Length: 417
Ligand code: AMP
Ligand code: MG
Image (cartoon, rainbow, N blue to C red):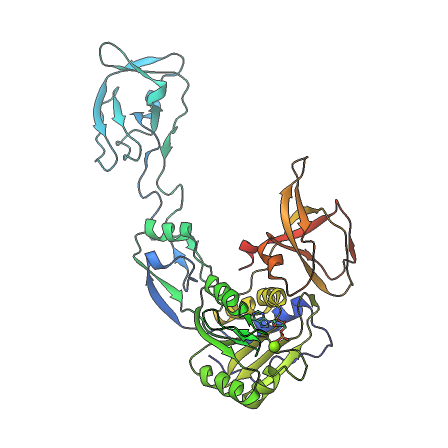
């Protein structure tokens, strides 16, 4: 990876908007640029490294869409039903036979169309008479019930694009082309630490004034959803020197170092001093709520992000700072998160000039419309506010109030990563 300069995350203004943060990350963080080959069964969720153009048409050959009887278009009954002798039978995977003129061919779904035929009568629409002839109704259009070669995807079509995250249906398409492996961007390696003397790891004894570390598990889960390879490095104590050394030690083996907690400017916030001892650091005052200062830095050329400790602030800033960074490291532009319009079922007042996220649950109103119901409390430390809701209502910088019945944009948790 290209080395980042020490001041690359510096920002001039007093408050940084979410869009400025995303833009700065996109322009300063360079892609790791390494790819690897994965088996198709392991490709879901990975980022495709190369464009894929269709090496063959889909379907590869013209075939029947139904079980029935195939005929040349020129012989279809026009005005009234007509009986045809049946000659030949072609099932899926079978070879197409040529029928003598005036004959229908028995055919099944997925079977190649016999030469000269181009139309299939569904078996539900015909009857077989006493002499074994099939009686076909009039009025069927030429070409009916046939899937022409390439109707899905023509050969040479740009079918999958470099930079897209593969979904199950994309993997299916690669399989339909006959690929067994795909070239993908290698996983971004992220080191994750929690910080704070008040934290105990689940599974270890918890002193009276301690709480179990929860952010680390949330962040690791979020990173995994983004396809990262995560090193879980436990809890760093609120002590400058060991913290600094721990961060420096992991820089060589990771593409990104992520911490949570300790980035305010209080005297017990040691992340700032720790990072400055081994690298460089700037604090971003983002115009976002919930969210407090986010620390951005460089340690031995590796980007460092220090998220706030309050769980909800940590969650929201992850979405706007960590997600774009991981995507930039993967060489992918951060696609905008697109809120869906829903109706507010709450009243809300906010300051203009910052973006706010309101934790909300969706419900269907009596008239069928989707309504967002605000979680009753607002604290950034309330993990229950994330657990008991479906997503975030996004209120833009210019909004100052929301009244019940107004339209607001809703981002479901599942769509944030
Ligand atoms: P800090 O940002 O370090 O000042 O922490 C702000 C609040 O978040 C404090 O109440 C911390 O106890 C809490 N907090 C910090 N880190 C974590 C964590 N990893 N898991 C749960 N809560 C945390
Ligand atoms: Mg702390």
